Image (cartoon, rainbow, N blue to C red; front, side, top):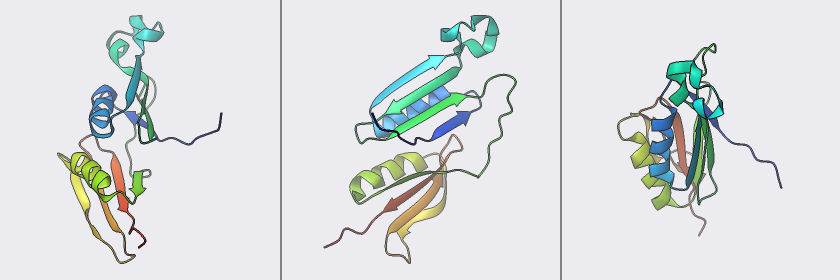
Amino acid sequence: MSSRLNPYISFDGDARQAMEFYKEIFGGTLAMNTFGDFGQKEAGDIADKIMHSMLETDSGFTLMASDTPPGMAYNPGNNISVSLSGDDAGELRGYWDKLSAGGTVSVPLEKQMWGDVFGMCTDRFGITWLVNISEQQA
């Protein structure tokens, strides 16, 4: 088994909705465990919140997420983004359309000075996505 590097996103109580949204976009298999699943049912409101989730897609993407547990501060910021890149323009434009719907586009998906088509958006859950479509070599 080889090692892999995966984005892990923390949410403020809406990890379930966010991960279901990403599953609609990317497909694949979504596994979710709540705090209650791990014996923290006495935690009350947190019992139904997501302790760990993992989306594994047919394209080979893996995205992990959880709700911020009690006692830890939720500090959203602009210090991390999730990047999607490749040369399948149709697939990547489809992801872009769905991720940017209901969100905010900061850089429209269009040809850039380096020759690729690139865009940046923040989805409705506050996560920043970078989409880069490489020019296919003739």
